[in-house]
Amino acid sequence: MRYIDLGVSDYKEAYRFQRDILEQVADRTSGNTLIITEHKSVITIGRKGSDKNVFKAGGIEVLNIDRGGDVTYHGPGQLIAYPIFKLENEARDMHGFLRFLEEVGINFLSKYGIEAEARPGLRGVWVKDEKIGSIGIGIKKWVTYHGMAININLDLKPFSFIKPCGIDGVKITSLKVLLKERVDIEDAKLKLRDSFKEIPVLAEAACKRQ
Amino acid sequence: MAELKLPELAEGVNEAVVSFWHFKEGDSIKEGDEIVEMATDKAAFNVPCNFSGILKKKVAQEGDTVKVGQALAIIE
Image (cartoon, rainbow over the protein chains, first blue to last red):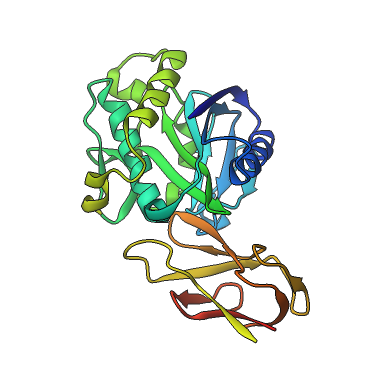
């Protein structure tokens, strides 16, 4: 797995970068690639979303994008993982890939002693009844793009401008809130990269869990 | 004449919604072209066409729900 750290990136620039990498992975000039970045503040609405779920933008740019899911907020202090992975044979299961991302998020948080879980019927990574990780993917040529966002030191206020994931009354948390201290973001990137290496795509356990 | 059908997307997923068409009726399609984008709850998926021809008719319109195995388009 190739690993690329984009640092703090503009959403649209990172999107173009993902699409370039996707073409390379699709035609096999490159192997599976994990892009990790933090985005400058932006609100994005996925294909299941509606701009009704954005109450106010608060000066933040709002973009409609080609991933599954509803509305979310990205900003500095949140780690974004874009796995550009070719799904082949039995891994050609979109929702299996969503479960894989949840398992990666759960594994990552366990490195901080946090017990997280996936919740039946709701996508994402949860700690008790609070959401810490959001998931939404796109697939072209059976290669994945978009991915997962995990709140580390993120300012959570802009989540009050939107109805995150279109879920009523959802509470959002961050690793900083849970640990009651700021987290070293560079160290967190490496832990997240390691979690992507440790969890097999379509782990058997993840498949059975549904 | 051939029907392009919605393929199996995931275990337990029986349907998806048409997000939008990448081609118009009358366009010529090459094998492997991604012809339509579909969405389930957290995933957006581009359906490749497995044969070449002319896009004769879009059976499903943007916003329509289509079941796995149902026709999306007729290619001639």
